[in-house]
Length: 285
Image 1 (tube, rainbow, N blue to C red):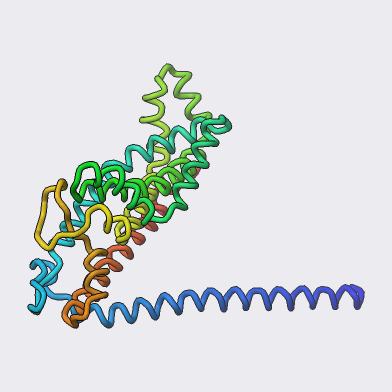
Image 2: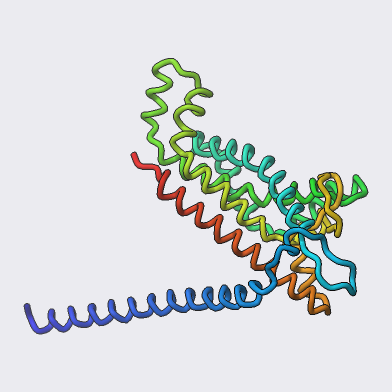
């Protein structure tokens, strides 16, 4: 090689090393920030974890102790109803987008999904307040579930569409050629082939809404009692954290740290489930 070529090669290698070192520094910085946050959260929250936190309702103002049983039940109720509403609708829209690419309606619907994904959660809460809470005259777990279901739709739709697009059209054409109806082809060929991606989208949607508090301030509102009726206001874990963390009581701060730890552990477990299903059900054709 000519001396000029050798010098050029050395410069390219030096640039590559600098860029790689820069990427590594950014990666380590992100991991360090996450590690510090988790360490501090576990340090403050682990001392607040006890049986009373899971088995008791909040104590009145001025009394120590109590737990967040009402918030845990309320969160499960609100998220479960939201999932029942959003998953069938989101999967259906994702199937339509995957099966009808190139049409004007499909393009407009895809843009609408992108816009919906960018709407702040508090705006969705205000809209549901105007649509449901104000006409009915009362806050409820169901209205909170409607707001959270709207927030769940974009990740479910996107994951369903992107997964089903990977399935070869020849499989669907072969099924239709054998006399199967479009409905049977979708249920027996298309959906099983994209089950992993669809399930991942559903879990991502649940993980996204489980920590939301802004839309619930205008819909579910909160309730210190243990409620199982979705027609009544309920408390949720994010709402309890928001209320207790901003209070002047040290005991409430302790409960807020415990609720934060419960919330983060649940999100971590959901992400672990996502990774497991991504590896096990990865679409390969």
